[in-house]
Structures are given as structure tokens and as C-alpha cells.
Image 1 (tube, one colour):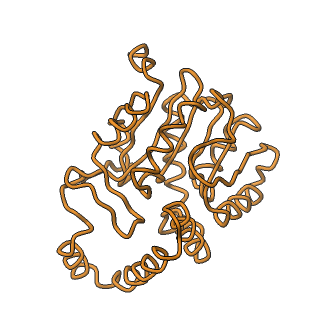
Image 2 (cartoon, helix red, strand yellow; image 1 turned 90 degrees about the vertical axis):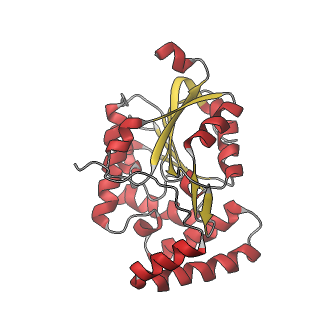
Length: 267
């Protein structure tokens, strides 16, 4: 598997100069961006908050293609990204008896592999989009995973209010914070410690920048690592950058969060 050949730079993808340069280099992508921009303008005035905004985005994208809605340009890429998530957690010690919470499970790009691997009833996927969860049910049925009893739940926000305390040994959020403003990330970090079992960890990916933090159409958000590490600390959690994830062919970076003190004990 090839390693990542580029590292996050300092460019601001929201700047007019970057957009002009990108359009010149990729003119075939301009119509799609214009459609996204028109949708952004419409949803800004018709939705009350970011969760409602992105739920509407997912409804629109899922109607076209559930796999594309979760960020996969092809079925082959959907399979490859799911395999990457699965293999990474297995290398980090995931066991069938673990209880995994998959935040933003989508249409189970990685989730179906976790469902298949974990003991029955040990996979719990949540998402803000009812449309993508219906697609997830189709994946469960299509792959014959009904007897593994996966939990698939619709949530209004990331307060995790309906989930049990200190229950999940692994919490996972792939390509969720890359689409989330700071207040949504803070909400999740404020509550994830409650559902995380002692000795457990929370892995999340994010769009990393070494320059100004910014967003594009409120769909793609770019953060410095230090910002998210501090945000975790603000909520009593320890966070560290996962260097070994950087070796994989994925554009996002990864941070692991644990209860404060457990990281030092494990070192």
C-alpha cells in the first residue's frame, strides 16, 4: 500500500485566489462546485443550525449515491477506505469482545466490517442522517449480517444522551469532524468521556492544516492539530496525534483521545 506523499500545507481553500487557481487547473469540477455553492446559500437560510444543515446535505447527496455521500468516488474506493479503517483498529488491538461506537457511521463503509468482526450486538452506529441510515440497513441485509445484531441509531446531535455510561471500549468517528464546526466538535468531546469505558479510546479523523483554520461551504472544515488537542483538554481528555495513520493513503489525519491520566499510565 503506498504511503502518503503530501503533507497539509498553509493554503486557505476558502480564499478567492485558491478557488480561481483550482478552477483553472480543474475546469471540469467547476459545475459541481457551483451546484454545491447554490445549495449552501439555500440551506444557510432554511436550516436552524449546522446539524440541520448537514442533515440536508446528506439527504441531497444520498439521493444521488450513498457511497459518494460518505466521500467515496467509486465503489472500489468505498471498499478500500472501509478496509483501511478496519485494519488500522485491528493493528491497534481491537478484539471481537470490544464494544464499538461508530459516530457518523454513514452507510457502513467501515462499519460492515466491524459488524462482521465484533461479537453480536457489540457494534453501535449512530448518524444524524435518516437517509444514510436507511442505506446502512441495506448494507447489513445485503451482506447477510442480520444475526450480528448491529445497532443503528438516528441522533439529533452529538450529546450521546441515549447511550450508557462507561460502556464503549472503542469510539470511532471517521470523516465526521472534517465536516464539523468547532461547536459541534466541542459538544462531542464534552460528552464522549461519559460513554467511554475505562481504558478505552476515541479515534477521530480531521482535515489538518498548518495555516489558517477555515471552512469551505460549511461542508469541509480545516483545523490545526493543536486546536483539537486543546479542545479535548478543555473537556478533561488527553489527546495525541496518531503518526502511524499518516503512513496510510488518506487525506485526513487522526487524533486519539483517552481519559486524562490513562495515557500516562500506558506510556
